[in-house]
Amino acid sequence: MAEAPIEPEKEPATFEELASLEKEFEAVELEILRNSTLACAPLYTKRAHLISRIPHFWPLVLEEAPPEIAQHISPSDSAALSTLLSLTVSRFEISPDTSLVSAAAAALPDYDGASGKKGDPRNLSFVFEFGENDWVEAGVVEKRFWWRGGGLVSEPVRVRWKEGKDLTGGLLDRAVVVWEKEKRANGKGKGKDGHVEGYAELVDLVERTSQGAVSFFAWFGYRGRDGEGVEGKRAKDEDEEEEDLEEGEGMEAEIFPGGEEVAVAISEDLWPQAIKYFTQAQEHDLSDGDSDLEEEEEEDSPDADDNESESGDLRHLVAGSGSEGPPKKKLKT
Image (cartoon, rainbow, N blue to C red; front, side):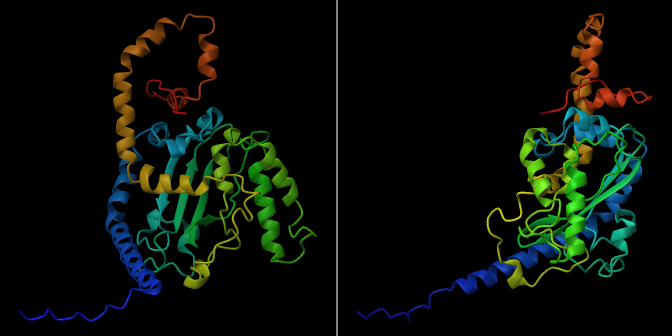
C-alpha cells in the first residue's frame, strides 16, 4: 500500500494579514454605504417634499423615538421639540443632492457634490429647524460629526436660547466657551493644570449635574474622545487613527457622554425609518381612542388642567399650537 504524500507544513497566518483583511472588509462596507447613500438620495428628497405637507411630522416621529433617544428627552425638551419644523440628516461629504446638505457643508473644500465620491460616508450632519417657540430662537441649528479613531467626534454647537430659557442650565454655553478658548489657544495659553480658563468650572458643573437631569439639547455640546479641531479636516493617517487615548482622558468635561449613541440612533434608525415611526404614532392614536374618551370624562376634575400642563407629551403640546393636533400619548421614558 502506497504511503500518503506528506503535505508541506503550512505557514501560520499573522496578525498583520488578519488586520489587512479586516481593512479590506471595511473598505467594501464603506463603498456599500457610499453607494446606498447616493442611490437613496432622490428618495429622501421626495420624502422631504411629501412630509413638508404634514403638520407636526417630526414632533410625532420623536414621540415614537427608540429608547436610545427617548430616554434623553425631558418634559421641558418635549415642549421645545414640539415646534420642530424639519430634521435633516446627511452624509455631507458624499451626498450629490445639495438639498440634503447644509450650505456650510457644501462650501467645504473637500466636498464634491458633482460625483459624490469624495469623503467618508460615516461623517454626518444633523440639521434641526425650529419654528417660533418660548425656548429657542426660530431657525436652524446644525451639528456635524466626524469619524475618528473608530468612533464619532464633534464640536460643541451654540443654541440661541431666549433669555432665561436655557434648558441645559448653562452646560451647553460653558462647553462652547471652553471649546472656543481651546481652539484659539491651539496648545498655548493654558494654565498649570494644562487646561484653558473655565475648564475646571465646566468640569465642576458637569459633576454637580445629575446625568438623569441633562437636557437632550446638551447633545449639541458633545465632543467625544478627540474633539480637538476636527472641523474641515480629512481623516487622519490610519496609523494615527489606531492610537487610543487613555481611558477617560478629556472626558471629565463631556456634558453628554452618550452623544455618539444618540447620533447613531438618529442617523441609522430614526431618520431612515421616519415614516414607520410616524405611522406608529397614527396607529397609537386609533388604539388610544377609548382611553381618550375616558380622559374627557375626567376633565371636570379640579386637578385635570394642572396635570395636563405638566405633561411632557409631544402630542399634547403640538395640539395646543393653534392647529388641530393628534390625540394625547405620553412620551416614553
